[in-house]
Image: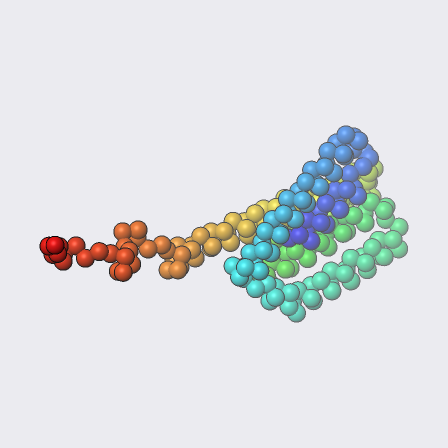
Amino acid sequence: MLIGAVFGAVFVFVNAHDPLNSTVALLLRVVAGLGAAVVLVLWFTAARGQRDGSGAPRGAMFGRGYLVIVAAEVVLLFGGLRVLAALGTPEQANVAWVALVVGVHFVALAPIWKTWDIAVPGVVLSLLGVAGLVLAPTSAAAWVPFLSGVLSGIVLLAGAVTVSWRTVAARRSQLGSMSQTDPTAQTHPTAQTHPTAQTDRSAPARMP
């Protein structure tokens, strides 16, 4: 989810501007930066767990299905922007289209990755993108960057933090279970000592 956090932060940084109050825009950027930093720390923690052998291999996640969806995303993204420009739509519609395509991409990845955690932010992003496209031709077009950009970025960051936290917590729980079941991690009772260190108290004492 590191990529999602980066995109979320970019969404907020680029689109947090007028008609938002300058103080509100600055606060949103600070929150976005902190959220991305949290995800980065959690990502490094999870990556260290994978190097230690506690994490599951993730190579299968980036197979043919993933590549097909990413390729389709790129085509739809840039092709759609060209179509919007040819139709003469306001430039605010561009961020709405990006949010829609990114959201659909997450929904499509959910069954391939066999995790529905990314489907929820994907659906929300798609709805925010559609709402922005509807709003773009109206007199409220200035609010589209906030609706489809800033809010989409916040959703991405919140989803990335949640999924990353759950991943790290699950791996810590797995490590705890492994340490409890591993016989090499158990210590011998302190009452037992090496036979050579014990004295034979049953032998009679020698008389001088």
